[in-house]
Length: 221
Image (cartoon, rainbow, N blue to C red):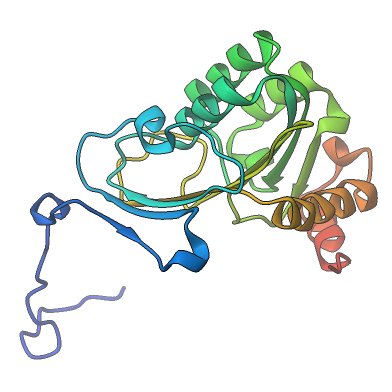
């Protein structure tokens, strides 16, 4: 049995800084990139206010204090894009957030959805994963070793990439969000999704974790 005793020399007091003490500001980069906005949103800020009006070529980067989550950002973007494709990648998803995504899909916001999820979800949340597969089909779900979090929104008008540190669940922590209308970046991530979906075994639902890891090891980008 391992036991430890506090050592004031090796374990100095930890200084805790609350984000509430940080003031808000908006920083604009030089004229060569006027479409980009950098926001520090350490206040009550919802996703619609954060995203604002979608603009061609926009590049929005924000840090929030958990005042809105990944699903709220997805809803706020799809409010403006009209029906399109949605590619979603994250490590995990929560029941409530998945239910909200179902609601958005039932409103015909997406003509196609694909999910790239961490293979541990099959062990951690088997019922939730089964519900996702029932709603969107086995072909819409790929499992791999995943820690990236992003969403891709594609229409004839928009090629939007939403990058975030947040998973698809309610997590009151400092999180990063970046939203860019960038066809090159959209194509980069779409190609990764396409490769993973084309190389995965169609019967992943019956695969063991070890077999899923083997699939991951065979990926090359």
